[in-house]
Image (cartoon, rainbow, N blue to C red; front, top):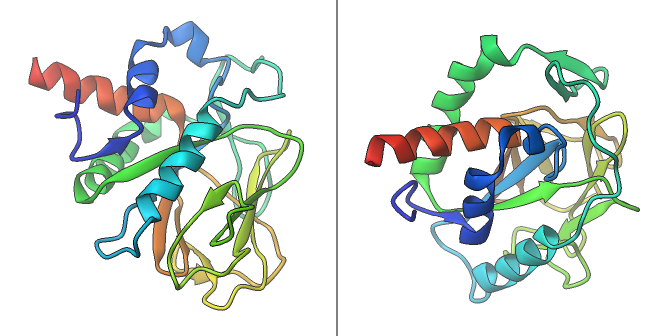
Length: 210
């Protein structure tokens, strides 16, 4: 399984995503989007240990939202308006190519963005849902909100900024996210992905290896 990508962690998530029956995946057990955080080439001691602990904790927390009832496609959001339906068949190949390029570039940790009771804090402090031990990241750097309308990210007046698609966010101004958006928290890079697309890419890679 480790041959699927140079590094997609934790392995338990990869195994579960590959084995999950397609009808169950339509219930969005991992939430509407995944956040994949790239491990920097140079990190301070404890970066991967802290992130691994946060990701594993996030994987064990069930979402509070009910099953998806659309059945026709994947509901995503854009920077302008939430809840836009996406044509998966039309966009799948482009997403697959982009995703493979990202995964082959470095080790990534995957964090499901499930609906929850409050915002997911991202920063250097241990109190955050995602702890990024990098000196370019503020104690509380950004927040991700997962709601019925979609997923959004806000910068919390951080020193080095939160970036989406190359644009620095204004402090405390939510920005809607959609699949394959690139993000940066200080120097730490990340991107979003639909669970269905990641599963498809991993299963295709597995078939090529068999």
